[in-house]
Length: 338
Image (cartoon, rainbow, N blue to C red; front, side):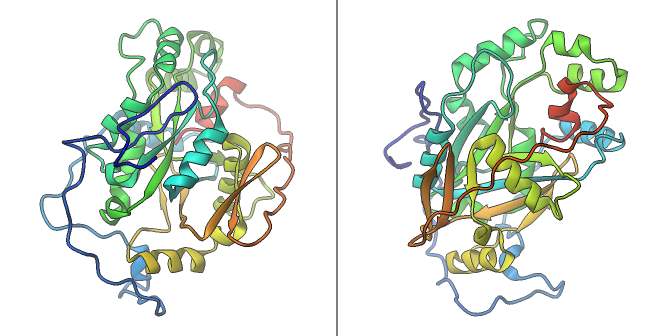
């Protein structure tokens, strides 16, 4: 299954956005320079060239200022929203992405979960002005009905919104689009129901649930709130990926030098991390055929090829703290939404 043989495809058991035909396929490009295996060259800022977003010449992309930008600033000003957060955007090969989506399984079409659906979008379609159309084709129609049932008071509640992911992709530069045989793993979150909104006792959070989280949102792979025992946002992202998406990526692929080496071999400049509009620190993991996929119990392990798959850590319950907000707010106010 490749982008050359599939259009946007979303049968009941799989949700995979693949390259459509005319109008979305990128035009032929000049042959890329030969990837270097030398030590990373650094810019005047001290950053490796491979970790800096590159822009093509021509008219820059102008994204509309959406509702999440203002909401993010407001949310970060609250005690819950200012808590450290970590997330990850996984860029995997088509085969790895396909296995991850299959392993995640069918989305729950009866109630809201986080994330609701996992989809793979080919990098050729990860342009800020194109990604919405690709994702909309793979958005499960049953989830559209679920979204409308959660917010029957809004006529647009079933329409997918791409602001969060488009803003993230715009910051990664144009080299991402030219990655052959790679997909971005994206997720979709659903709006809060009227019952959840009405049960929220905090007026500020209730306003956010009602007026901001009122449509399906296309986002990075996953995100979570840092726990006291987690030393970095990347550790938080690794745990969130395992708990929410049932995918464990070996520590080796989270290493900065390993990620710089992958970018250098592919001849691309893609940032190692970025901060999203909600203040979360998002790691950008780029995988190649060096990574092998093995199933360990109910977790899909991605590890170095030719080596035994590591045993994923057991789930660790979050430390108990007195709840300041209703549990229904946690998926947004505690950073389950970027």
